[in-house]
Image 1: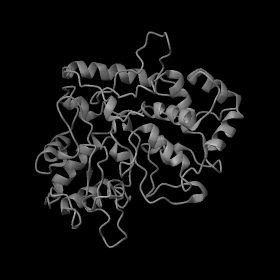
Image 2: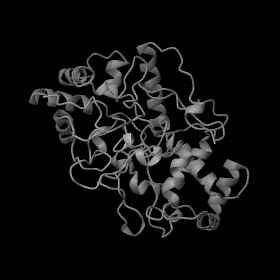
Image 3: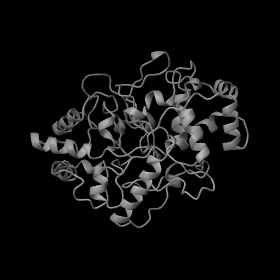
Image 4: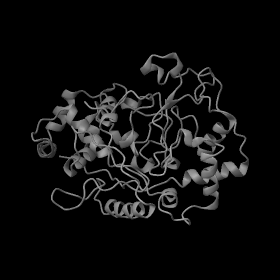
Length: 364
């Protein structure tokens, strides 16, 4: 299977800010008219599919071996909410990635079948289509690979391919959908995760107040406090080094791994990226999360140890917790109370417009 890096499209020359603002409005209207999957387009409809990305985002990279179609998006949405996939029929992807909670779960840790408590905070899937790697330690190289992990993990969804094929195969609507999307009724784990990953590539959030101000040229979009916060963000705070913003797009992540000291407070330390690379210098390094829609995805950090954005700002202001692998950019910032308030205002300006997703009726 190709990795996300191998099929990432080349960047086109930047549009003018006005043009990108118009594209964002068109995309926003397309999403607003959707029936739940995020798109209204169908084959032969004359509507671009997938539609242009929201203001502030690049084009969505799509694997050559898993092209996007409206029918596949719809099937993926149904499977995303399908609890019957799990071993005991109680957990779906949406159980940890709730649309109403920023596609996270609002809890410190993920919860699996039988009430099993996970080891890490459930990351949002907003804009996960752009990720080079997935999971906090980056062990999955595609959305398809990522989706497969929790489905099979005994403490998460605890399912087997045989169970999935038997359960979904007993439902005529799923057999019909797999026939339409994949050319046969055969239900396999690979087909299930391809559909789920395709749906997840539609969970995009841009066109925020920040995007309208920075890319759209709307100087009234941000409050003076948020403007000051952005100046701190890319200035003295140096937050922009890991949470990237450039003249064309703002992913607010570098897709890399950093040790910011979280977890080095006397509790058992999670190895993080070290578990994947087997290199001691990667101990305690975790993936840089996107900051988009960050106000909706509390609690924060890989261990969910910080409950509010105010706590996150205070943590970075202190320079993190000392340890042998602490990122050299982690230093005390000594922000004033007003500066912290300005940073908070800026972070709230990153709330965008993810599609409104509603759980479908159970398939029969």
